[in-house]
Length: 182
Image 1 (spheres, one colour):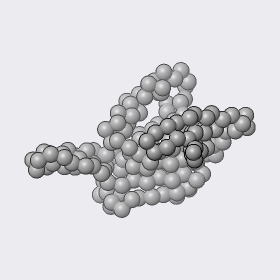
Image 2: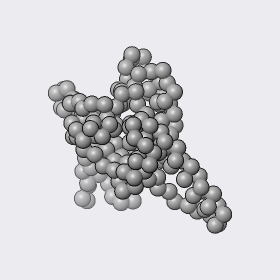
Image 3: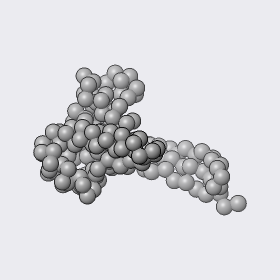
């Protein structure tokens, strides 16, 4: 959010490559995207769960030609006594309804249809994401050749062993972990 807010560009691009995460943290970004006057174009490579909801909050929703999008019902873990667990479940039900209304409106389908599709992991790929109105269009995304030649290596040690995390200058290439087999 701070990075988006600090941008001085007329249009800011947010690249999404995420399996999702915390609903509450994601809602902070959703709120920002829905209330900012900035033009924010999201480009989705992989937008699952909360990342899918974030994508639907963007001014313009684009996807890579090989995008994978998936939405499902909110999942949670409850702790405490039976009354506390019931309160947490009721909160999640209200939160799920809020998200269902928000996403279904953006996609242009009824809440009931959205719930029906998302009950069993609604997954789309490539141009199907456009025809289902989850994206506004497709784009090709590539790094400049000079980025492919850059590499960063970081030594890491943990209880599970040691190794090196190798990242490429092109953020489209996933990091690689080289294990130290000593």
